[in-house]
Image 1 (cartoon, rainbow, N blue to C red):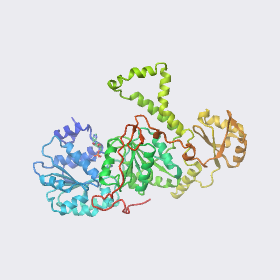
Image 2 (image 1 turned 60 degrees about the horizontal axis):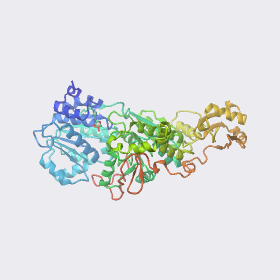
Image 3 (image 1 turned 90 degrees about the vertical axis):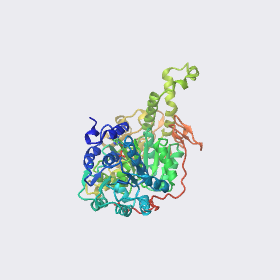
Image 4 (image 1 turned 135 degrees about the vertical axis):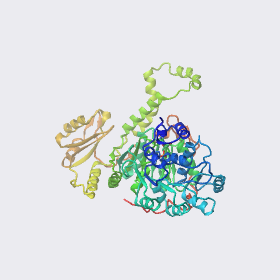
Length: 608
Ligand code: AMP
């Protein structure tokens, strides 16, 4: 038997959701549907976005309402226009094989007269953002006196956005005996308070551990120096050729700057922030949803309610001020049972924040090294190889060109052809990254701050100056050194004991190694005239002048030269990957549903 039938959902709904690909209930659906179907409980569900909570409350509503009547029986309040439209659309889809189910979306930034007209025509389910809903109530254009169920979706977000009073006013127009179902990704004290205020003895359901966040999300962090942040970010993106990500910044200006820089560097990126008009926001979101954008650069507020599946990475270009916001950000990936990665690019001083978030989520973050230029080139090469391997060939269209292509390559061996084909893109990355420095913050800096971080959280650990100095050497794996070889080479050259050498980090065209402070002079002196295969060997104290700016030799970013499947945009910019290019400007003052500027408001929540 279909598992949804077993949960008590009827056939015409099950048939509709089967067409949407719902074969098995998600955990929250499994646990909440039987409770909500009784229609006799208030309910609090602590659940992340992307867990299937819309169906968790939407399916029971379709079972419980009387669709022969045409008055409002259920009111769903949610924080954003995007979520409002999404919920409306989802419920319409679940109900598409039922007769006379009328769902109306009520939200700001769109014609109120259309919404009023739909309400007058008769509606059983109203999905609304609080500002516009209150407006309609104040016009006496809707009667909630027979509402049986109120759903507060993303309650924490609604409170966050300052909708508490609006919600109070709206709920005061609904009957005492209605049932209230509240869903929230986090459970700060304010949400607890409203749960207490509006509900009697609610049934509480926590999916996973409290505040644990989605278990399918890997949390990673990279430590870089502030000046290397953008270069490190690009390198992470280049290391993930199939990334479909949301990049979070703290301010509108930073959002805009990063998006502009990325566009200049040939990435498919655009920004979403509070200075865009609703129309511009819609346009950006449409492009992102349709995958014509690969990177969406957003502020926390602007990204609220973004509901796009298959986001592979969330990148915290700047850490949020509050732990709750980190949960919301990372919840944009790993939706619907998929996996995702939440990356934070931080400087060593911000390690304390990472530790706090780890504690808040009860999850360990993994420290990852910024990939070397060599790593990026290798990853890109194999990405091209896989693309070539998997590309769908349009036999009909290409057929006419095949004889000419064959003629051109008739004297070339298969190996030679493959090598050249792969090199077209590989060379660009190789050229750009050939002298790419290590962007990881120097180890002493990291260690020192790990220690001071530990100290500030009473975890003990000795505090003091590192006994090692870190040295750069212009030899690496391209010179066929591994760690052992390099150790041997250094000891041979300097006559210091191998036991006194610390960590050795072999990169592509260079490496780092640690020696005792007392040995630094001896080591540098020993390499003064040294040559390796006719090349002078260079030793430097690490941490000096190792930024992408210095050593990329001014060559423009490989993406910029045009990628595979590239297109030419209207502005002469080349992009890769067949993404389109309608750039949206950034003028006009975006106001939210209640007409107040939310993004400029001081936040009232817990800060680090
Ligand atoms: P939600 O948390 O309601 O926004 O749902 C996240 C995504 O999961 C949406 O794209 C849903 O269509 C999808 N989804 C919800 N329930 C199921 C299910 N039982 N099986 C497969 N996909 C689902």
